[in-house]
Image 1 (cartoon, protein in one colour):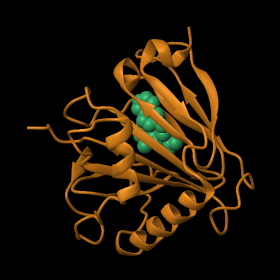
Image 2 (cartoon, helix red, strand yellow):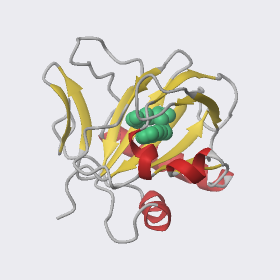
Image 3 (tube, protein in one colour):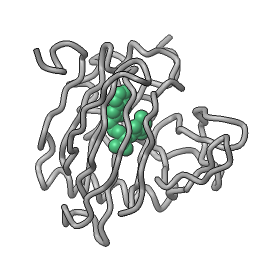
Length: 204
Ligand code: MD3
Ligand code: FE
């Protein structure tokens, strides 16, 4: 039995066409002018190698006080831009037809950025899936299990790939081991953008 059958994990390779990828990238880069990418600092005091921003009512932030969702950008103080419609449409189709996402975290990886193995546990209700969209250079992604010491599998996430983390997989450990520089020509100057749609607040 496959990983997806047992865990609720689904990978949809090339779910976005090249034209859809370009349109989404243009919208993300335009909105990132209003809500710039920031190398946030972990509670332990280390700047993250991944630069982040968010769209939607809530955005994920980290600083000396900890990890949390906030209604405004950590440096500008302005509300986050709206989530692109192509993403809310994907959420309705693949994740939840009734409850919309309220947070879209955007990660920018340059050739040297990584994300260590972690769980996403800052949301109120883990019954809602996480939906991920990759743009630009391919990532070598690592997916483990519910326990930190569970075995892991390595897979590539390429531009246009969509990944759904539902059911048990919602709490699986995961991370990005490395980026493959030059693997895509989508983003001028190279790099990778990953967008994750989430339900951060309780649904009622
Ligand atoms: C598996 N992002 O933003 S996306 C994150 O590629 C994050 O930037 C990675 O981990 C990235 O928190 C991975 C795919 C993904 C997202 C959420 C998950 C995989 C997941 C939640 C549970 C299990
Ligand atoms: Fe994560």
